[in-house]
Length: 169
Image (cartoon, rainbow, N blue to C red):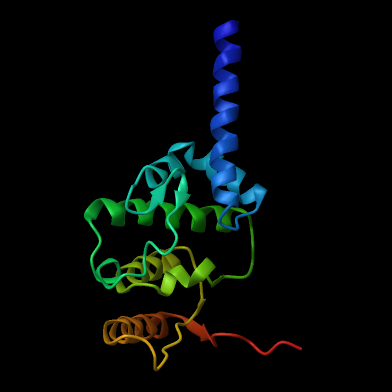
């Protein structure tokens, strides 16, 4: 009986830690719980353990902003990101939301040609129809402008796009 109680306690802690990790990035408690129940603790453990993307269980601020990271990711980094993005999309769809639009926190989905390819493929798979597009500014570096033009073209090829910010009244 003691082993059963200890096992349930450990499972509860793992669930709480995973849900807190997901909630830090804007997912609701319900969506976080669904991700955990569908995928188990491994849904977030892999990306949390990736030192190129997370540290101490938190996403590294701006892990995706350098020119190198925009254009080159290791196979392992891509795998971690794909699994994380797909887990979030599955959980969103399983929660029966009807708005099928993508607008990521800090516009991470538009941060790299590699990520946008991943996001677009998964978004099509799960029935998303629109996506927030990327803004291209005069002060952007040459590499950034090239990457953003690719991202904008990729989004425009398969999705209805939205302006960077809608008018607010």
